Length: 284
Image 1 (cartoon, rainbow, N blue to C red):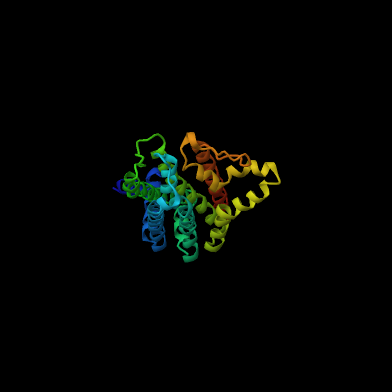
Image 2 (image 1 turned 90 degrees about the vertical axis):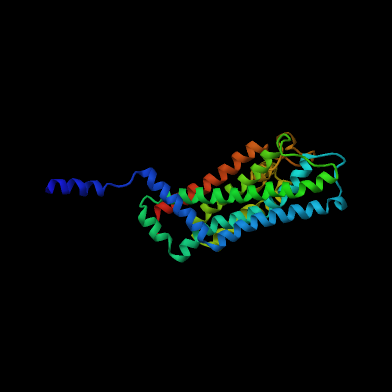
């Protein structure tokens, strides 16, 4: 009888499979994001600003000048500008707050204690912030196309989603926002501070391109590196493949959308790797 009890006890204490534990961690991170008012507000801001700016640009396009025939490039600029320009900042804020908020509140400790290796927690956070930011970006870009389509159609300039490269560019803009969130998550994990993380991310997204642009006129290799900056590579993801070029001889030219996506992915992966190394190597 005692042997039977021991066998049952041993069966009950058997740990859950690793895959199941990871699924639980991922679900927990999604629940955390949904329960944080700042995260929900950030996602709503991505959608609202994306739609609002695109609609404002479309309503004023007659006074600003419009192409004489349907132009996918013009449509994409109108549709993606708000999501790309302001959405990247909001997505970065979301990524930083997803981890720094837990450090400031002290809730990161139970999560890391329950998963001693720590890395699955960070991986689950990365998956969660990427998913929600990309989803919000997709709603913003596709929604912007939908609300501006009637305005373009009245002028005979409407371009459908079925046109080559249009749907891919809208999706690329959304994926860029998701990768920016992952990049910011890595930064936030490394510095463990909302103020410090946001400062670093804003410098990378906004200040670094300006500084490099100023130096690029004097140093050729700096000018050549300009398209590989995070925000510049991300902008190329909003382009159509065969139009990702410029006639300005002083500009080294934007990357193709696919190469831009790889560069943004590299920025995010490096940031996340640094955050993971510091998370694993230091005390909570």
